[in-house]
Image (cartoon, rainbow, N blue to C red; front, top):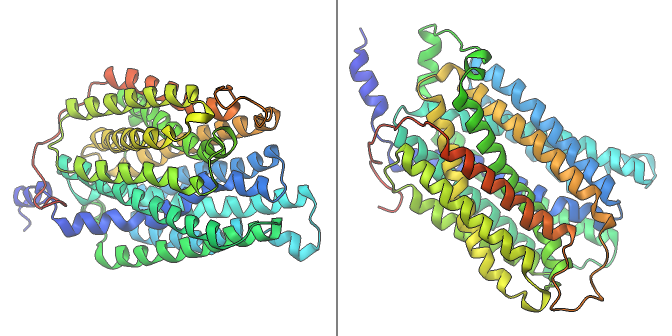
Length: 455
């Protein structure tokens, strides 16, 4: 007969270093392809000849497919479990389809036409397929946290480690992009396609290696298996909708994703078009951001987390982003070197709000394990839909932005890129701080990590 008190005690014990590490690397393929998606998709599509509005349609199709899949995947995972099956299946779909997103318009080659309409349709189809796999992997990986352990501090540590490897994935992408942009020529649309095809192939290879290690090193979460054996009743959607905290955490998470996704999507446009920095800055500036985020994410896993610390660190990160947004809005072209300094603080702010924002989701779920996938899926659905619409609107207006080449270098013209990179994230961060301060989070169990990653 099972001793349930001993069982619960073992599940509340802090996790070891290997368990945290194996979980943390499981999202690497998603992260490296997502970095390429948000940083270079719009640049790539406009470079090969699509209008900004057509490029926005391609991105929106992917975001909509992603959002719808998160709800579907979350519901099925809550019903049947099998996190690793969903994770591996989604990763396979990501690996197969992503090369077609940046590898040229396959329908155009089959039909023998390069019309803008056919290109838009072709890229939109593969963008949607890629995001279906991406969503399945994301929901299974994020909701896995609450079923691996009941220890609240370890849950935040898992999120912190996951965020740290998100930074590793992004840095890997920018390292690859830096080399490709400097080695492979880009004089024609075909040459541009070749550049991004190499970036896509190498990214898939790197991410897939980490997925294999994750699949070998991570077991199917024990808590979810026990929940099905004991016949726990699945928690209904209305249970969550009636919770004020659910709506508060959802708003904070969506605002946080708007900060990171919108800023990432328009960073390359800003440094090249507004600040007129060198082409290598498309890789170097984001790399600085993610190096700083990686360092902060690793340091955050050493902290004993309470509800007040979650709220305090999120507030600090949000206010820091507000200051960075003001700097981006006012930075003149002749002082573009200061963008490297701003990048440091953006990286710190991103890590603070992402780690604590995901940590709030774990506090929300608590021990309600039979509804955890719905929580992560529904929040991701809102994130994808709202981010998709926001990027679509911003990119649709980009073609109306005047050229800045004849402006004085000391003049900080308020272009769409400045608003998208500076104002939009700053406002979202400020709203996130206001909502966070109003939350009533329950203080988690204070048990430190058994083997800190820096130990």
